[in-house]
Amino acid sequence: MEQKDADWTPVIDLIERISGQEDLLPSVVAGVASLVREVSVLPPADIAGHTRALLAAATRAIAARRGPTEAELAFVAELGVTRARQGVPVEAVLSAIHVAERAIWSRAREAAAAAGVGEGLLLDARELYDDWAEAVRTRLIRAHRDALRAAGAGPEREARDAALLRRLLDGGSAAALAAAEAGLPAGGALWVLAARPSGADRDGPPPVRPPALSALLDGLRFAVAARPPVSPGGAPAGLAGPAEAENLAAARRLAVSALAAAEATGRTGVVHVAEVAVVAAAADRTDLTAILLDRYRAARAELGANAEPVARAVCAWLEEGRDVAAAAGRLFVHPNTVRNRVQRFTEVTGVDASDTFGGVNAWWLCRAWLAPA
Image (cartoon, rainbow, N blue to C red; front, side, top):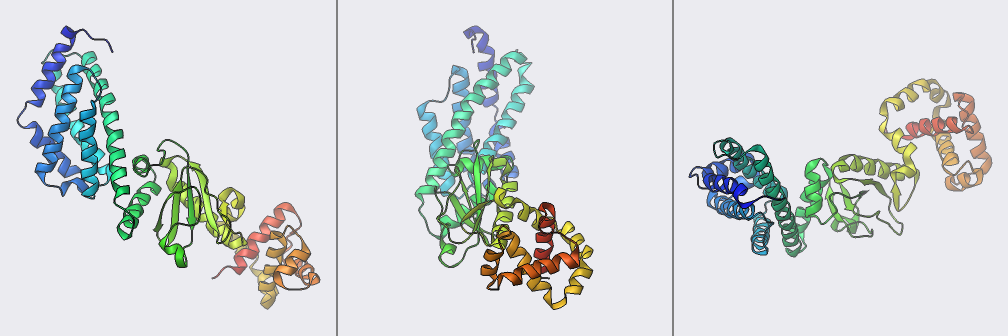
């Protein structure tokens, strides 16, 4: 950005006039305390001191038309560490800075005309500030994240990870900040894994690689990673992705659906939702399930006590790729028993399970028959 010194003088005068207003800092601090709940618990002098220092640094940078110095970034890093130790989430720190920015630039716009600063000059000043602020935010997030990592593991760390992961999985604009705080690429592809904790898994992440942000949430263990997690097998886990940070709420739902579908079909290890899309869709569409059950209510009544073994045979036969021997082995029955039960299902329902779409409907219906009431 090219500006002659004489042209830039009105901008410097405007900045000095605004920063010198006696009511500016108290007004900004009051606004931050009222709008950012996590920061409002801090002593006003703490908020005022850091706000004053940031304002002074930004003023010097704009006046000199430069980015932040290493000394300014060191102060920002110290602020990030301090807020991390105080238990203030990094997005709350950034929100507080945003509230202060908005208040100060609002005053600048109001005073610009009287100070002889045209819209073009004010825009140039704001662009300079935005460049300065971006570098400041990056250093603050990194310092805050490193401070949390240095705090160590244990129950407190698990609680912090759970809070951070919940913000991340809520999606939206705040998720990008949570991703940056967790050391994940805020603008890149992320993967969500859901597993059912049991035994030792309750005290640690599922056995996946690469390392991921992981915590127990709502009875399940979730993990978010920058690459698709892999598992050597064992208990099933649902996987969804890739997705950007702001879309992780949907990815979380898909990962949970994948977990339920993997469990329903006897899959093990990490199972991507795309591998069990039909099963996941069937589980989510309870309205269509209800229609299927109603449509074939008479058929189930006709089967009577045989409804459950017939349904198990149909599901096993379809899930084993219509391999009668494999289905029989899975059910510990004779292959002819499987054939007879599949045939009986077709007779009473009229659904041809050997047909592609008929097989989907047959599997869906039989799974619904076997589901708990």
